[in-house]
Length: 550
Image 1 (tube, rainbow, N blue to C red):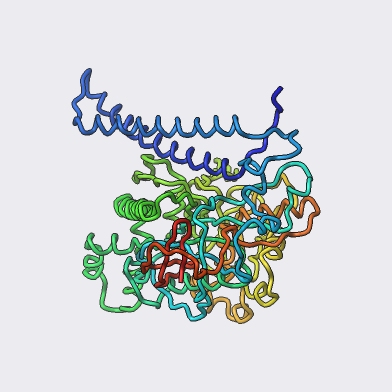
Image 2 (image 1 turned 45 degrees about the vertical axis):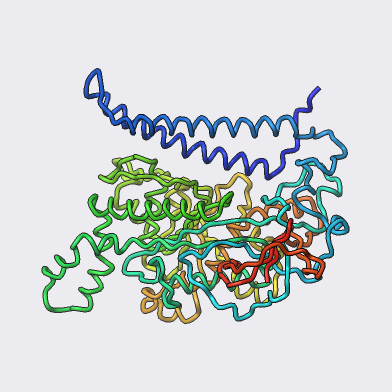
């Protein structure tokens, strides 16, 4: 008799989730094709279409069928091989064993000689449009190797029983791959353009903060492989349309500086509010993200990471609109083309989304002016709204969803965490106390408040404009984003805390060892190696089973 419960490895669940995401994309494309054919069918009993369109529809349905078949195959394998919950001992080769995905310290005896101080292993990729940073603190001059036979997956959940094997004293973590799209707000942003190699501007400073925190003690033992991609839409609006030339024609001679600001920045809000230019901006942002996602997947064959979006100011409205409308849906004169990938986390900073939703009439107000909470939720795994108290553009979104006005959650201070030399285990525990609702049935928190500096309280009105830009230079904001991406590790640690177990040590699953004179090197080449968010020129050596990086 089969047991009613089984052990399901986290990697199997992640693989199934990826297949379902592929199925959703294929089904969405098939639906778009069927809608197009249905519109043509209204023309009469017979419709005339291009043969290429019919072949494309057939190929789309075949992709959809293949995605369903792959998902069914994975489910069948899981069903056949998953051990029952009454199994007292799992074999070493069982794919469902907790230790099969998190290597314990006891397994080290079976490995090659391990370097006493292993550094985080680099992930290799071709040079992209990301800026290179000089590695002033480069400590990776010793030779390390990566065992290419080691599987890559996400940290799993522990088994439901309380045997000691469920809670090893050391967790060897697999890499967590993440791609983060960054959308700017109003105005020109030369630093967001592809190929910009300068170090000035919000985007380079933002990337530098990610690198600094990832290389700090907070994330030293967390193998997060992160890539940032900028999304620039201002040029698509102002360069080809001719709106700036017409603006100059109608502008009087006085107040030139104010009018110049209006032309470059303030007018962006008005343009986006119109169907014609709103469509142009939505198309530009969606096309860029889809194209960069496709290029990234092509350059990283087999990549199965997650994708998130970070947006600021007007960019948060653009992102919100894209994530709250289905592919092909038309609203307020704008048709949304849709994204080709699911979004894990959407982080909005300095966001006027709440007041825009109110101004559009998208809140539920009856004839007597009584407000009923409930607005469109972005289609993503998690939605976070970061607000600086002095930012006149940023507003709270929780009251529109829940109707209640609870105090915003204060962001964790990155400076304090570094000053106290916290480990990730301690950081995760602190994070849980601040972000987890006291009531298990409570709705998840959406509004998070950045720190107000002492001098801002004295001159709040004077500092209001600057407050809208502080997010780009805030370590607290970057720490918040990184913690969202490191959730799988935090979730595993939370299981230890819930069971009253001591926190485990964290280290990388891929064993790093010193290159020995006996190693038979088959190939030597130069390559660009990615370490956190920076890229470096390195020499790589390859034998029959390992990749060595100098």
